[in-house]
Amino acid sequence: MIIQVLASGSKGNSTFIESNNTRILIDCGINYTRIKKSLEKIDRDINSLDGILISHTHSDHIGGLASLIKKVNIPVFIKEELYSEIKNIIPKENIVLIEESNVVINSLDIELINASHDVPAFGFIISDDKRKILYLTDTGYINRKYYPKVENLDAYIIESNHDEKMLMEGPYPYILKQRVISDKGHLSNRYTGKFLNKSIGDKTKYIILAHLSENNNTEELAQSEVEDELKDNKYKSKIILAKQHIETEMIEI
Image (cartoon, rainbow, N blue to C red; front, side):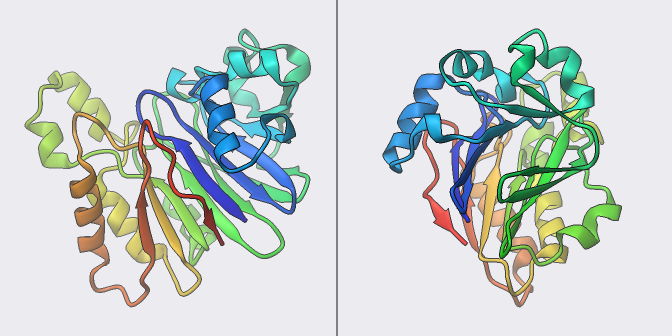
């Protein structure tokens, strides 16, 4: 399985995943041109995509969807709760409703888990016949019922949105600070580190920290706070920081 985060942050999100010649995007918050150029850098044709998974309908996750669908005829897989927003953006014939908690896209089996955000939102456990990964951003907490499902995965792409001290001492209005730290907001560096400490195992090769806030976090803080929570963990994984304007390295698991 091949993974590359094309963009991550409040200005747009998109992640490329490939396995056994199945190629998908998770979210499309950046425009067609940028996605096309990013894929060309790794010798992938944008017309070879087999589908797009949408986690939720905030603009930083679907802002480029209309521009892409105008150029590429590709199915967009969404949970039913997102339909009312998506139907006004792209043609109905491009929409594939996910009625249960699982969907199969060629060689990829995808299980949806509920995120906790201020709109309906979902994370994804994605597996092929050998590997399994978690993709989860834009959630205020992770329901403990999912913990057994996400133990010892090969890779985690997970939100590490803010440093709590930086957020509370920063310029955001109080009501916005409360939204960010609430159960309907975003995961802090410390929360993510504690979650990973409970979850990673001997299979875990990579942790990709995603959706870092430009105002309430830094790359150094995200990495150091997560590493601090993992310092006593016997399993060691490579930590990669996803960025807003630059693709991550392409990883293979």
